[in-house]
Length: 193
Ligand code: ADP
Figure (cartoon, rainbow, N blue to C red):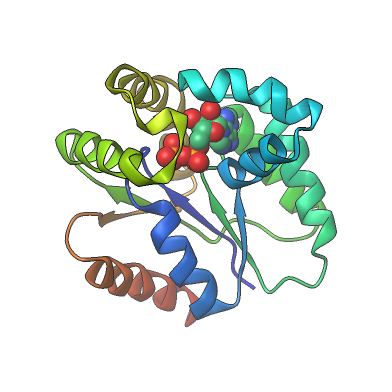
């Protein structure tokens, strides 16, 4: 079993690479952004609360996302491993995740951090906004706010896992396939140990 965090700023390619990684390693994909968007589409109370924050590019409260992840872990007792995408996004979420995994006698194997320049991120998000239909991708001010949220609250997640020597940086620019090959080689190194 291997549990992986795919880490990086908005627009770094986490969603794209996650799809390929879960397929290659038979992992369960847990994207808090996707789960929240499903809640919004279903019109639940949680979805309504989250939508106001997400549309502005703000993070939703830790308790909300931690609750969703806890439920998803319980729903998949037979999983070969989990791929966390867009979670954890704060230090409190990281600590909560480590505790949830410890209760299940497992842990994070590796944090794969995708490095992409700020300029490239803004370009990709605006481009995605043309087709994604995501309200948080269309406006430059909202995109900048998401990047600020990342810099002020989320970047610390990588410092947190660095203390446990779990972070590996991977270049997130280039073709989808070259990035995928780099991610795979880091995972394979750890699986063979
Ligand atoms: P991106 O990586 O492009 O920002 P996501 O789909 O991961 O897209 O997230 C979209 C939005 O959902 C975030 O801007 C935030 O409002 C909310 N969100 C997703 N995951 C979390 C999380 N772990 N903690 C707080 N808010 C989250």
